[in-house]
Structures are given as structure tokens and as C-alpha cells.
Image: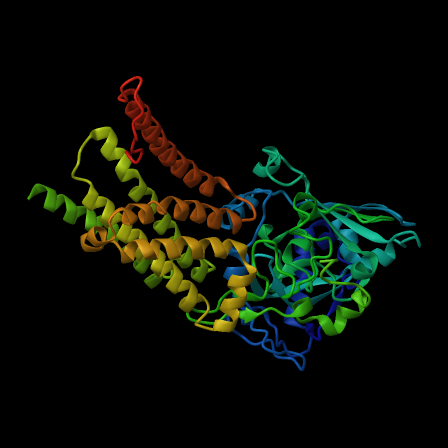
Length: 317
Length: 212
């Protein structure tokens, strides 16, 4: 279920060059306009976010209780830094994110290397409240700030040969210990989507969460969010977006193809080879609370099931 | 008297992890996923007590101090206690006794199968822990209680298979348990060699190899 706030503001409307010079300020300004609202009642004013357990109220909302900010910020996998979530959060603070540029290349008319400011300038930032389901069988409800990836891809004018999109995370072995130690996965981290998945309106590039810029451990300054797939598809700290003719080999799928498929759609009837995906722990819920039964496509089936109409989801997991 | 005091002291020490955990629950010190943290910490302590239990016999062999069997029993029972809490937390705190979801979770999660195997063994050992059942069962008691190594192996697999990444901690425990097992095997081989040396030449003798 997608819940958007009704307010949105185009990046184009902010023209002050002073603001443009500072990416963080730019995003903050955009977010401020988005969240505080311009004339419209501020249902999602930043202060509201302080209280956990608030229901996302909107005609579409159903049982989406926002996960408290502190949990989102302290419970995240970032294997480049550490296999331990707490350590990763601490170590991620060393990541330099300003300035930041993203290369868009491959099967496109207008590729190039773009500053983050340029990438944001053409987009409309909005709040999207999505359930986020990790392959480790926990979930959160996160108010992302971002824009549909499709808008950015269209600007680069994909060729008809572009069938897949490959995303690459930042590679900074001097700062990321597990990259330096060559630990576990092949670095840098790589993810991929089919072009129709990438163009789907639910697929976001996020720059913020809870009305503020993304914390570094959550993937600052720019990350992917694909709400109907397991969290590892939603790659962090993106530096490169390539449009390709063929499916890229993605990090987890390359590491353990039996356990992690290319699609990685949330599916309670396809267990991981070592654990069930039938239920999930909703973070923020107290002791003696039953787990939530995981939904096919994480509950976004109405919007995305059509993408997989004739596919055997047990084979293409 | 001194031994008794020591035993009391050690018993109190064995309760400390539980106390520590209770304090952390009361102070909300268990992090962003407190249910999982609670569950894992109890599992960790069950495994640690299992390692300690397994270490008693080798220690006895090395130090040739014979007063340790009582300690082995006590540590074994603490292993059982922490493992039981681990299981109870899974069923109640985590799943709140929703049996259908629990059943699917167990059936679809091979890593839990090994946890179940380990727990069933430890349960059987705890059930037959008394001296009376030891007497009653005779030689079968020892056979049954040797299953503790299978429990240890199952626990290690249970630990490894639930992880995506950091395998350092289970590796540490796997190493300890392997070392303890190797030590026992060496002792068995050694005693068999000794037994063979004691057979007089030129005569066939039925040997009893159950010396440990």
C-alpha cells in the first residue's frame, strides 16, 4: 500500500544558487517544504514523527504504524562496514557523502556523471510510507522521502535495448573495513532490477527518512527502495546506475544463488534455504506479540503482481 | 565444607547471566530487536554451559582430580535450564503461542530442526540426570549421555545456519567443541593402545574396549 502525503514540491522551485551549492541544505530545504507543508495543514509536520506508534492516517492507510525513528537508525545491515548492525551504524558515520555524484550509463541516450544536486533538481520529492521487509524476517514501516526512479531513468532516455538496470554502491576500502578485508561478498555491492520493475512508480530513490536527510547508516545520500522486494535489493549509497541488455549478477545472488534470487520478491511461500519467510517480527512491537504473517509482494501485490503474471515465482524467486 | 562453599559460589555464578538479562530487560537495554536479543542471549548461554559441561571430563583427566562429576551434572542442568528458557522465549515472547505460525516456522527452517534435535537430547539427559536413574539404566546411561556430543554438533549447525554473514562466533564455539571432542578421542585411542599392550603375546584374549 502506498501512502503519500498530499504535499510535494518540485526541486525546480528552489532556485537560490546559495542553496544549490550545499547539497545537504538543498535536501533539507526540499524536505522542509515537503513536510512542513506550504499553506496546507501539516499532517506530517516533522515534530509528529517523534511519537512512535502513530498511524499513518490517509484514506489508504491500513495498519501501517510507523516504526520509531531510533529503531530505523539503529537496526540496519551495512556489510561494507560490519556484519554487526550496531557496529555498522557507528562505522558508517565515517562515510564522506558530500560532494556526491552518480554515473548514469549503458543503454541510454543521455548518460554522464551527475552531481547529486543535478539529479534531484528535476525531481519531485515526496513522502512514501512503505513496509520494509528484510530477508532476515523482520520488518519496519518507514516514511521515506524520495522520488520515483522511473523519472530519473526517463531523463537519461533509455534505448530500446535497455532491459535491466544495475546499481552499484560506493567502493571506499579505506573507509569500509569489509571491503578492505575482501570479506564475504564481492565488493562493491551490486543490485539489479528488470527495467519494468525499475520504472514502476513504487520504486524509489530515497534521500531522506522521517522528514530529514538519510542517516549515513541508512544509505545516505541516495539509496534505492523497492518495497515489494527483500531489503537487500534496496541498495545504499548509489554511485552508478547502468542500463543493460542482460541481467547483472547481483551481490547476494552471486554469493549464494540458492538462497538469494535475482528477483527476491517478498514471498511467504518461498522459504530461504535455511529459514522460513512465512512470518516476520515487526520491529517496535513488544514482548508477547505474535509475529506478522508475511504477505506476498510484501502487501503490494495489487500494484506489482502484474509484472510477474506468467512467471513461476518458486523458480524465479 | 570448602568444596560446598565453592559449589555454592559457582551455582550463584551460573545464575548471574539470568540476572544480567533481567536487568537488561528492565532497563530496555536489549537494542532495537529486544525479542531476538533475548532469545539469542539465552541460546548463547546454553551453548556456553554446554561447552563448560563438556570441558569437565578432560579437565578431570588432565588434573586427575576426581571430585568434578558433581560439577558436570550441575553445569549440565544449567545448560538445560538456559536451553529451556531459550525455547520458551521462542514460543511465548516471540510467537505468543500462535501454533500454526510456529509449526510452519519450524518445518520451513532447517536451522531450527537442529535446535530441536539438540534440545530433545539435552532434555533426555536432564530427565535421566539423577543417580537413581544412572543406577537403573546401567550401561545404557553412559551410552545415552554420550549423545551430548551430538547435541553439541547440532547446536553448532543451529548457530551457523541462522546467520547470513558473521561466522566468527559460531566458529569459535565449533573450535572449542572440536578440541574437546578430539581430546576425548585421543584418550580413547591411547587407552586402547595401552589395553593392546597388555595382551600377552601368542594368546587370544577377548578385550573390553569400553575403557575411556
